[in-house]
Length: 214
Ligand SMILES: [Zn+2]
Image 1 (tube, rainbow, N blue to C red):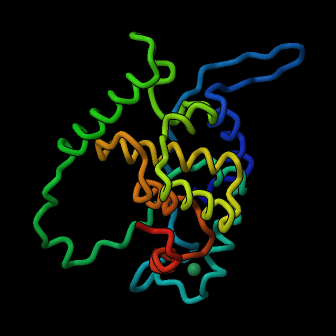
Image 2 (image 1 turned 90 degrees about the vertical axis):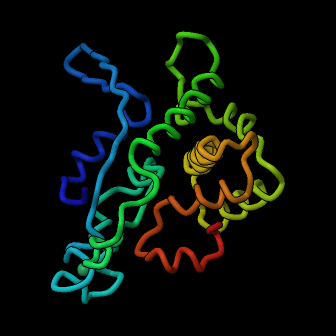
Image 3 (image 1 turned 60 degrees about the vertical axis):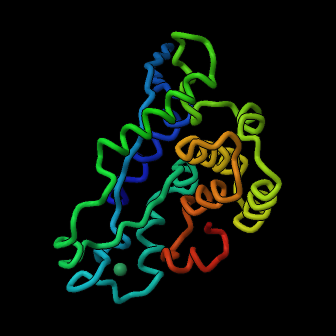
């Protein structure tokens, strides 16, 4: 993703937020529906990262420089950042995971069904997923328990979360709870949601030691 021009990436901000693309010409505005899920990948830094020949020898600043090509407001709109470790030769010889794609898809389907019901109107799937819930509504839907609330408030202060990020964390936590089959959002769901926020130049091991993981 950092290989794209900043201007190109920033043009995605408005449709990401509003679900429509607005084209403005002289005296004319045209709105096109534009609801999509953005999935993007990036190397840890310009060097390529990982072990071996493409390992970074420049330190965290290299990663910071690489990601500085993407604007903060853009990064703030991404809900899930997941570090993917390089596949080793040992990994390749291991048996496949017990939960395959079909099983994972079934869990996702169940969670989406719950969300579709939550947002009401039969046949109306305009707000079928947690991501589309307005901020005020998600607070009530999350039904955060005491531990979860304390954690998210503390994290919002420590990580200086924007209002947008705060609500996005709640929505992700609600979805994790849905996948877990839980009626209310517990501390463990909130903690997991927080680990997915973007934090600059910080390897997964450092995130874990910050005490915000489950
Ligand atoms: Zn590097």
